[in-house]
Length: 458
Image (tube, rainbow, N blue to C red; front, side, top):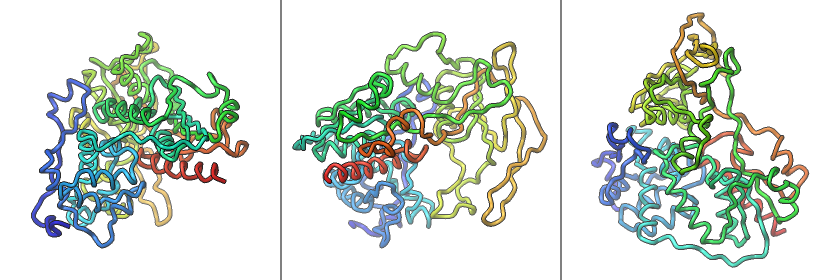
């Protein structure tokens, strides 16, 4: 390392967000960037640990200490080469990954000030695109064809890996444009769709064929895909949201979170939405049910609609700030997360269960909630939720259900394209594991590509 003691004198510096009054008026990315000099300085804080827990914690096995050293020495191209050796799309993970690496950084564990690994990663890939370090790879074709069904992070990774190995890859996507969750699930203010378009163009230049607007099982029979390709990868994600079947669920104004998020992203792409399906939060009282990242994304979107008020409720108790003794490392720290969307305006409430939806005629006007208490579990047991009987009504014109997704069942496309009956079919990402992180889906995509390659070489 250039200066193995830099962490003693240099403080962690984050790029931060654009001013609230400015960013809330648009859908541009809220996160700012540091200049290249400051970025190199931040990279110098890497301690060159004997055991790099950051590498251990990363689902795709990024070699953080190696590219941090190259970055702090100003060797950007070499830093990109090391980074891209393990990560297919650093421009995605550098923006939206929860940075498991930083949660395991020794500077996090010892001083609660980890190296800015995620931001450094984003800086490296953006420098690589700006300076022309990234050139289209034109592999020698091996004569075998692979179909990938789904173009989210897992599907894109499978396609990228197999294309580099010489396979002729076609990616089928039922939505209007490729990208899956990246395009129609994550708001533009967290991930600009220009970033996705840039990568798709590069993949097309390298020989991958994308067929958006093509639903397998509808426009093309599943058996035709199995018959036409040497191998097929199903990477359709975990698409079924968890519902809330309580009284009043039928009322107008109650939507799943991705109905709002997907629709807003489509509008920004210039895709027309029928007036009867348009969700508009302007001037309305919005309630988001679910305290995770998807719920936070609904908060940020509703604020940009100029909602009259935004409230987010969570059934679990409020986690502690900074450190949680119940989730020590190496467990993922369950601590209070305040996102950029929360900063923009939101009332947050915890330990609340939804009892029923209340309406005037067929329209939602409020949601009855009940306070719950969670028991402290004995060792090996799960905590139990107990209703307290204390109920009240939160006034709401719109409610968004952001309570996660169900594990994909062996039905629909997974039944038609089942590895159990089709030896040349493979399943990857959330379609195989259930809902997870983008980086975890990418890790699954790399493993699936290896499995397909092994199968086709037998």
